[in-house]
Length: 354
Image (cartoon, rainbow, N blue to C red; front, top):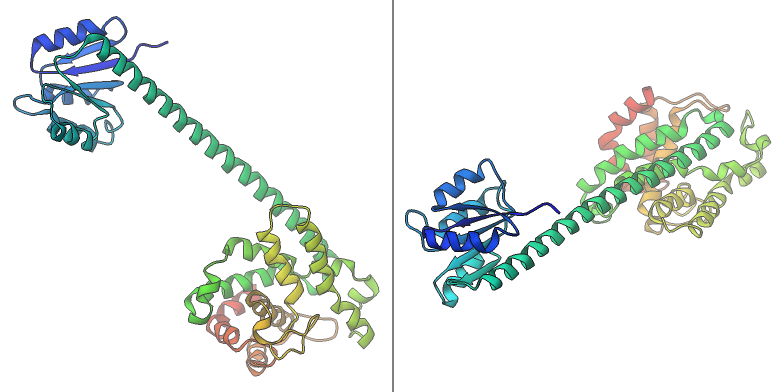
């Protein structure tokens, strides 16, 4: 085992000699007759421990330890005070300044050796624990990155499946995610939505929007890919994609411990076709009965449908889409969400044009 290094500081040469003779068999010892010389040595060399006399001319031990503990390069070095003072006030002052122990002179050599041995062991264990915590933190961060990468890979694969099955909507999932990010980032600035929106993990919420149409995977091709307007019966089938998506995410939820991401995803899947006036589906929720995230997605989903090409219609202009959404404030859409949308609609236009 590598020998530890101890600096002894005392203006009394006799005390330095006794200390050195007592400890040199077990440690590398350097002696200094003043705090100034110690501080100069610390500029280039770092010991494992400092034994510091309190009563010294020019610069006493209290002043020296203040400089040691006030310097980021030396603050970690443990300091034990050696002093002839035998009163509680002096001891308390030394400990409050950062000393780890207070040994009264004249000291017993066996006691000094044992006290130093114990403190060095504690310091060694402390460093080992710090190293362990750093390694553990790195392991947790690496594991978290792995889980996140896996989550994103699965998410992207699932959304690509939806996009490929429902290719007539052309990039709908990517666009709605970008629209939602714009809208969500505005919510903490709004008094009526601030309290709830500031509790969300925004990164997870934005990622979760990608699963809002996951239920379309289960819709038959002759309906999902029909190049024309749906019949009433076909539309009833299409409407089931909300419930199917919710059920699929619930099943995943029941088999995993990572629920927050799935909770957000389930809200988007289940409620993005609900309406403010209660005439939406699948549950006919009214007003605030629909979660805030679902109310936001309802607007975003409709905006993208309005400005995009469909087999049964040409795309509306951004201005026309804004007009339609404004007219449906309080019926289809939460009026507060409409107000937020109007404040950022230029950003929606930029995304739609891209």
